[in-house]
Length: 185
View: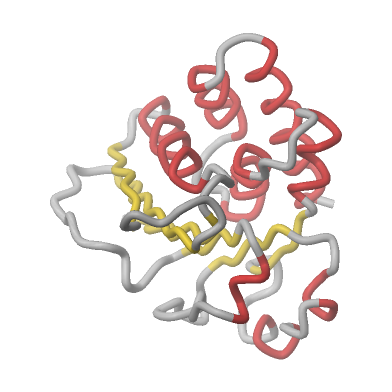
């Protein structure tokens, strides 16, 4: 089982990202589960969502304490939330930023991960360019596909278009493709 924890803020599409990731896994014939963890927070409050992907039935229902991958939609959370809690040294980290890990003062932390397991992608800027709004969730799923190899980009694009039919889905799919290509470069 591959477990993903997504950190962000209310209004950034954290919950939708986990749902789209699970739909992408279903499209590949895998089992998946997506669910959020939040109370009555308002827009801008820290939010966490989870996604499990497996080749067999998933029976676990509790929050993911030891993720295989982290997606961080808002890098300001590093100052207020222990984002790395439970992540093993073999895990994957994808952070929405154009600053790089040096700019975030995380280069030493990221050095513990194998080469290619920790990446930054300017998902908000990519979303602005393709979607016209600063919502990084779809772009980050494209980056996730590139960094982890757990899901194919075609499945991610189909899940995005299913969630957002029409021109908005096409724009988000272009953003996901751009982030995928960024993470492969």
